[in-house]
Image (cartoon, rainbow, N blue to C red; front, top):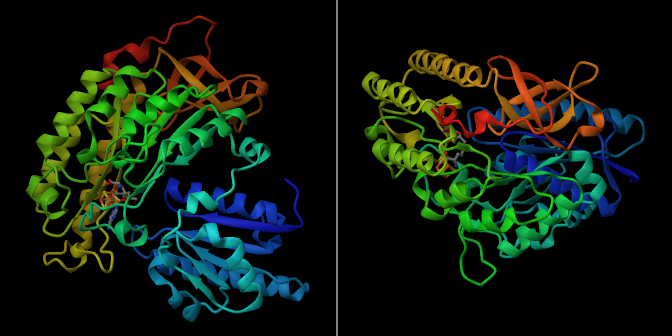
Length: 464
Ligand code: SAM
Ligand code: SF4
């Protein structure tokens, strides 16, 4: 990409932030900004922050200490470097950031980055520009589509935000406060964005949202759509060969989503469905609005629709009041479902959320012990799931060059990284691979002859 000014964006946290960082780069590209991986060369450095777990704000302040040195270095060379803080810490802290770190020139929240050119112009004239209002206009209407060159540089797999914000108010979570109320983009706009990505060579689309299956954007008929119907609309976009979505809430799994898994072969058989805890008492205290039995019924329905579906989840251990018996319920749920992988976290009190003020906070040592037991169990499940792939053929979307000469890395339908030897010009293709070795996190294989069948993808054992 060409441009006279250099932009460096450091993105923390979830895929929503990764997507937002790309869109910030896209909106600044017509203003002459080209991205650089070297912050010391940048004219504008943006930290796109995450507030989900502990010490997020403190980490941003210590990163700003490092960025201050870069800014001073640029000034010594006679260059002006502007510093921006974006994302959920910016939303939560606002002006406090400028007060504690005067090196910062502008602070803007996740709902304001479409105003970046205007905010930047202000920051060039005045010090300490802050914009963390929730605007009435639709930010997506003001954004620019990426150029074909920018899309190509970002790879063959892309995220597309379809829904933002959350109205669920789980008692541990800051998202409803930092990202605001739930809002969904219209189907037509998402289809247009996906069409543009596919024309530029993207083959896999992951629809993202804080609560993606609460999606209810305006459909092509003018009525509210569902995530299931949106997936059907996107399955028809030429060039798109794989669809995924994340992150879902069990409460919002509806018939249309189950039908999408049954009817759309390009919807990958891997579902991230966070449950957080296996104990009904804790689920109620978390305000998750579903029980363990509800969750297990959803898994059963989904497996009924697509027997090779594999699951992953998020877990929190040490939520206030979590007893040893509650934790055992989480362990038994993991055993019962048999996950292909999962993320697990120690509960971290977030200021302003109800759980932070609950009594019976759990001691750090108990949290740490529960987390390591849970993680060991999840790792055993993940290894077992990966080992099931040995000796089978899987489709692999080749994404990029590997670390060794001649090696490419791609992803299986179950999101496992697969390493194999293949010519570099096959990046972007979906190939069939024979899996010869498996590790805890990756699979290793070789290109299978054309026409080899992908037996494991139709084997219900994969979902078990
Ligand atoms: N919307 C998703 C859902 O309902 O599960 C996930 C949103 S959040 C970005 C991702 C994960 O971070 C959550 O699923 C939860 O496990 C974890 N998380 C959120 N708040 C947390 C907290 N206060 N302490 C520890 N983990 C937390
Ligand atoms: Fe946070 Fe997810 Fe709960 Fe919304 S549904 S409050 S994003 S954990």
